[in-house]
Each structure stands twice: as C-alpha cells, then as structure tokens.
Image 1 (tube, one colour):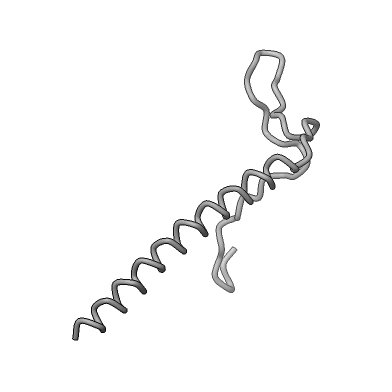
Image 2: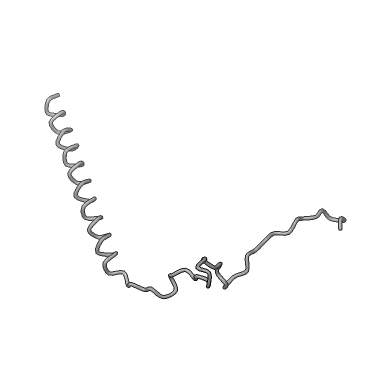
Amino acid sequence: MQEFIDMLSKVIFFAIVATIVLAVVTYIAYKVREFRKPKVSHGKSPVIGEDGSYLDPMLFEKYVPQKRTKEGEV
C-alpha cells in the first residue's frame, strides 16, 4: 500500500508542476503575441461631435422592428 501512495504522490506532484509550467509558457506566448500585434490607430477611435459627445456609427441604419399584424388586419 505504501508503494501505491508514493506513486500517487509523485503523479500528483508532477501534474501540479506541469500545470504551473504550462501556465507560465502560455502567459509568455500571450505576451509575445501582444507585443507582435500591429499598432493600428486609425479607425479604432470613437467619433466625437462638435459638442464633445460621441456620435453613433454612420455606416449602418439602426433596425427597428415594426409591430406584426395578423393576417387580415390592417
């Protein structure tokens, strides 16, 4: 029984160490990806009106659904 407990404790230990190593590697990969991302500033800033308020986007019209009527009603 003692051999089983020793083996189980080693498996748990290595699983914890592997999890921590994978977390560090993932974080480093995330930071490298963020560093390599191109810094584009045009088109990302909000449109500000003359009075300083933000304007709604002008590319699309806002869709407002109309009330449905049953067949035969006006």
